Amino acid sequence: MATFAISASNMIHFPLALLAYFTLLTLANSHGFTADLIHRDSPLSPWYNSSVSHYDRLHNAFRRSVTRANHFVKPIITSLSSSSSANIQSRIISSAGEYLMNVSIGTPPVEVLGIADTGSDLIWTQCKPCKQCFNQNPPLFDPKKSSTYRSIPCQSNSCNYLEEASCSTQDNEGHETCDYSYRYGDRSFTRGTLAVETFTVGSTSGRPVSLPKILFGCGHQNGGTFDESGSGLIGLGGGHLSLVSQLTKSTNGGKFSYCLVPLASNSKNPNNNLASKISFGSAGIVSGAGAVSTPIVAKQPDTFYYLTLEAISVGEKWLAYKTKSSPNCTDDVTVSANEGNIIIDSGTTLTLLPPGFYEDLESALEVAINAERVSDPKGILSLCFRSESDDIGVPVITAHFKGADVKLQAVNTFARIEDDLVCLTMIPSNDVAIFGNLAQINFLVGYDLEERTVSFKPTDCTEH
Image 1: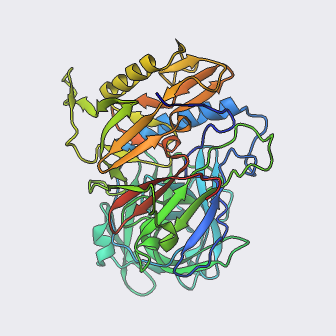
Image 2: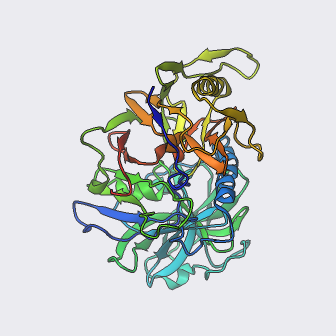
């Protein structure tokens, strides 16, 4: 049986909602943009805290995964037709477990920081006048000072698509404006005026790109779990209202991709290439030898990227996907025909599976791995082994998506969480199944929003 070794310096990468300086690597033409993504805990990051141990950073990421999973259970998501535009570049900055995208809004441009969220769609920022706002370090955006700000009329199609919308008093042009109300699974909220504005995205080393008439929310009442270093939220989900949809559904065919490098556990080798890559437009096409594709399943909310996981194999042992048929049912049943049974999410570190399915996987791995089983002292992970060796005999684990077999390496499935402790980076979840970002390391993962597919191509992302 083939096995893979686990290297402490080649261990883990956290959510793609990452600290990213989007550095222009290719011209903004038909080839699109490719950008660098720098993880919040990378030594290359200005947010890097050298006083926090590598293992503590791992556990913090694992805890964020559990918290983030709650966001997918009962979200309130709106849907909205979007405008489209060219390929873009930007930089995403993470702070205190949140991820911020640095963009400029308006004419003249005003820089704002928004939480980048792959699990929501609405783009919004806090605006003057602010009736109820959380504290933020950046200045509030003042729409009255922008020559390109336009509120959306109440009777417009865009307003009608919002799940929670109402008509407000007339604007300066005599129109009733569209007021939105948007809530999240963690009870955070924003309320304000739906509008269009020019967004400018770019980096210090690349030519900024001006994106006119981007739909966004000008929030006058906002609250919840927002950090003072940010000033709103930038939705990166699959719905029509998200920034991704507005910027990629164009002549470039609605394509984007990313390649996540393993994050080194220390900075002993300063020559390590720790930057991941994200590409938009034609540069985001994933094809060629080794590439496999699986359909994106149309489900509500359309924010999330739903895939169909049919099985996982451990070596030659095939484990069919199964879940409980109802909350009152004690028997696990196979549901391979249930399409869209798992969400692929670059913002969740761990992979979450239905309990019965997870138990089958855990049992198969316990038999296959010849090492002492122990408990995770933090109580987050379930399957752990005592070993100081990097090679504990992890078998080949393959995720069998509909039409796409994705062979996972040890770096995708196990992490060393202490000097002598290695654990499976998959956990059971009653509420939602998520294919997390650890499972996506060293794959070129491409999203085609026109063809409605997600593609995987084994890639050394340090060389991509």
